[in-house]
Image 1 (tube, one colour):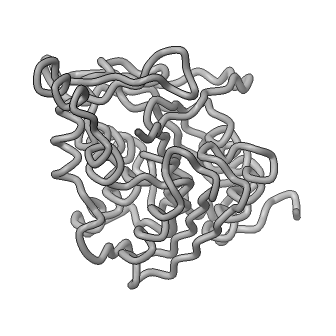
Image 2 (spheres, rainbow, N blue to C red):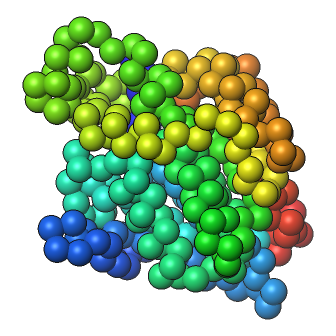
Length: 280
């Protein structure tokens, strides 16, 4: 069974988040945001970080994206899904639709004109759905590019459901969830029936995906959680976009080593179209 979460290292990021409320009544939950404003006269696209399952905005890749934004003089937006990190809400209430709603609410709150989406693992799925929803709106912000790191689109139907054991199927039917050990945390991974059922309604690997922007996929070939064959399948669904796939022979799912972070930073810099203010 794949694990789509990743460890959350301490980074020393002490900036305080702001909070917005998403949803009403019993569905209301506070969402934590860290927003770095642009410092350039012509700011260019904002970076939007989209975390993976059970990960948050203080992970090493998210912080590296924020540090890059500082060097480029552009904005960076990070936030935690409900049930994750510093946001409120109950993790087991989470679904792709719910977390997508929160991403859209963050965008509506900050009103960037252009975005480069950076999605890690499940965040890659959220990024693809977000691009669909923003294109459907037909107004700002425009997605200028995407960097997808070990992307896991449709992981509930493509990676979890085919591997379910009889015991896990019984647990889903009787308890509404199943759990399994995590390779990254002493706490088990929990997958709910609601997450799996909602995942079917958010599938993107069902036809041609038209994002309208260039995409760079970074994928480790030693990824035990999201196999590189999944990235190849995603590539088949992106024939209309300028898509680059970088396979990293010794890369794992996290892709958080210094050389992996440099690859990510390089891809983001290229898609942002802005040279660093420090001249590097």
